[in-house]
Image (cartoon, rainbow, N blue to C red; front, side, top):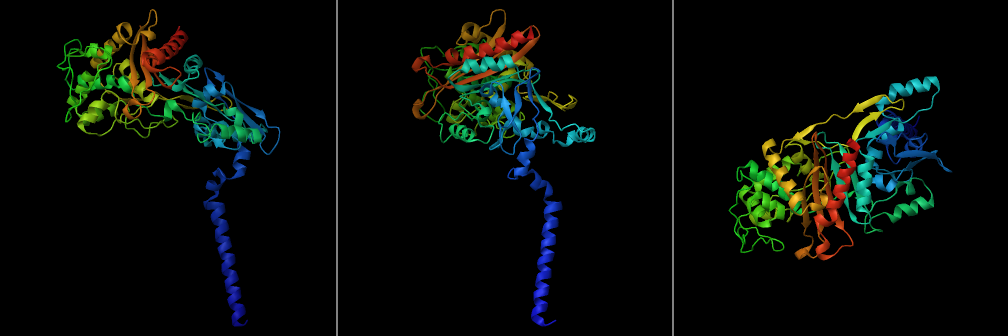
Amino acid sequence: MNKPLRRVAVFCGLLILALLVRGNWLQYVQADELASDSKNRRVNIERYATPRGNIIVDGEPITGSVESKSGDYKFKRTWTDGAMWAPVTGYSSQAFDSSQLEKLEDGILTGNDDRLFFRNTLDMITGKPKEGGSVVTTLSSAAQKAAYNGLGDKKGAVAAIDPTTGKILALASTPSYDPSKFAGTSNEDAKAWQEVQKENNPDDPMLNRALRETYSPGSTFKVVTAAAALEEGLVDDIDAKTDTPEPWIMPDTTTPLRNHGNIQCENASLREALRVSCNSVFGKLSHQVGNEKMIEYAEKFGFNNPELDTPVRAAESVFPEDNRPQNAMAGIGQASNRATPLQMAMVTAAIANDGKLMKPYMVDQLKAANLDTIETTEPQELSQPLSSENAQKIQEMMETVVEEGTGGNARIDGVTVGGKTGTAERGVNNSGTPYAWFISYAKTDEGSPVAVAVVVEDSNATGADISGGGLAAPIAKAVMEAVLKGKQ
């Protein structure tokens, strides 16, 4: 063989070797990665080749599957009351992937989870088609409906938790969307998808405001400042006068921290300061606790945690590291203080549960198609933000807010209710529509079965009509009543 031919032969041999190496690399090393890649069309074809398992609330499915009319995908996802449940389930679309529980628990719902291998093998031997498992939630249909209907056409969110376990009972966000409208691959589905995208819809209906949006918590945060002050020993007797001048000048400034309206806050007791919502008292207490300690207590309640999973990841609520005047403002829920509705429900739940904060979760069990339990979520203590004694003092204060203060719209006959209103300033020089907040819990002889946080981001109300007590408290009351009725 002459030299040029030998070079060609060697070169061709190297190409064949490279091809063999590449083929084996794809087949054995990258096989699993490629098989599960969302860009691999066969993944989606398999995902919708059989009916998906269901997401369950109160023992009933809120999802389903129907046969597709055309295309490679045999079945299409459906929802019952899709707009009401979208903040819980997310979407599952043949064209646009999936989100939230539909995505996180896709392996169970499609039947492809490794924990279903034995079951799937038996079905294959017996000739039974593969079936997806089910995701059993902690949600209450009645509480979710009360939250969703209460929000109505207002922009806002509701989160409700069982304080003793951490079970999420309601998770509503408005405006919402119906995931059924873009579950397929038709032109109509594509149009519906475009209509709910933020760039085309400023209301951003796909934003889960209960979990993924943060707001200034306003005066609802004063219960956290009260907890810090009690734990640090700055206040012992909640009915004793505080040493609070009127006006109180914020540290390092000549600026007074003003109170709204004509309320009397000079030397007000902690109970009275919460009842009428004195900015000066709580701003001064936040300053006395100090920024470092305020961060510590806020974090015990769940702030500054970027990895809070329900299992859907919640946005990080933030109590900031800041200078002294800004720390005073953060202590009344303003400045750079930001919280999700879930976070403020957690704060309320910890107080209602005598100081113990349970980790919030909304998946109770994962089940196979034959109803065998694959996994059960056990309640888990997250932290102890304050002592039982101090938690009960704040309960007394919050109950006074409902019985004698700004939270009267949350009263329930025959039930002890504690609450706190909040009207959080928004925009430069408070130029935006304020956020209306209300946090509350209901208490029976058996303890507290529900803690609620409501925020109304925008509404048709104007001026003085925008308040936590006026807009948000009635929604919280409806949710609490729904949970209490279910306990009877």
